[in-house]
Length: 526
Image (tube, rainbow, N blue to C red):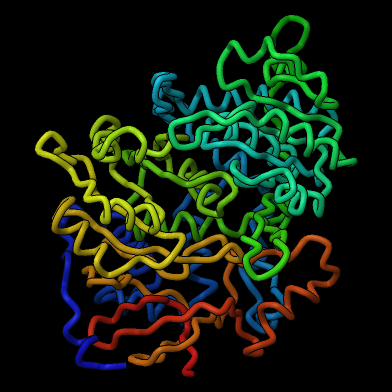
């Protein structure tokens, strides 16, 4: 790699004092407890990889994890990484309880679905709705370890149902709403769901596409199904005849199961499970073979808190606008923002199909502080020249994150020249298997063109292109693959190329001049 080219990489943004407060607070906790002085982020990074158990134990406390039993041990570093050592062994907790730890009138959701109007849901209302859904699922017969599959657009019903399902100790699996019946069946037949949670129609471009025939085909192809629950996209839908779809009902009918005869709902119960008890199944894309069903426990919650709160300055005053689709790992990650007390703006359409400034208008309308944009969507904005006008002030906007695929360097130019100068913009890239970021920005560090600013764990090789691997155990590593006894296939797929190191075939380079990377874990020299 041309080192002069790396040295000349343009500085795009430097953080002002309004950025980085959560990271500074956590750094102060570490300094006070361990009687050390941490000079800067890189000094902190060095301490973190040299004191891995201490780092994660302190994050557990700092984040305010809710639990019924605390862990006996953070991690046994003597167990090889490819044997998937258990994190926070002995702990008993529930992910849903942690996602519902906030109450009161603070907004959890703003639902912004075009002509259907704007709806708001507070954290207290989210708790009550989740309680009703959970009660209905329990009375239906959903148990710990059962699987619920969901195919839906980005709606509140999906998040509420997900919280209810995992409160019971059951497992949630999402698939993309635009997938056809054959593609859906190729995924969820593997996991034999007991319930299929879906919607009668989905938005696509300027139209609404009926799902009912697809739902019928999917229900016919799943012998394991005991119930199909259909969310009506509007009130008129409930008059439709869905008798051709076996074991089906509309959501309102199903929720009646959750009420007692007097209309009350039994108290919420949170099944206490270990950290690696399955909560999510996330499917790989299937581009290099049959889609794999990746199982995740709750180990991602702390890394999500670290990334959202410490690195991206997200907290109780944050408003996140995300275009993540249910079925991508980014949708599950976005749900973890509830643990941070943020407000989520749920938008199931594409801003492309309103007008050329729709995204910027939505940011202003809902006072969004943080925006997640898929890299391909951002690239399309740039190509179309869809930029803010004088009517879009974007005053609230603090952070823009692009991810899900490679972010082109020219999109850094687009953001800083055409959108907003005083904004932290960076790429974010991870993988389904870790349900987290492999590299990310940090609110205390400058942003350089085409680069992310923060390193995670590993031993970097600077200035040379290489394959990115994870060299140390991380709490957000997948539990394994569905139907993979003893994790034999998982080890073969991810640990065989570099013994003891996790690799997915992604490549990157560490810039020795800016101390940042286009991938942040260890880079193996080619």
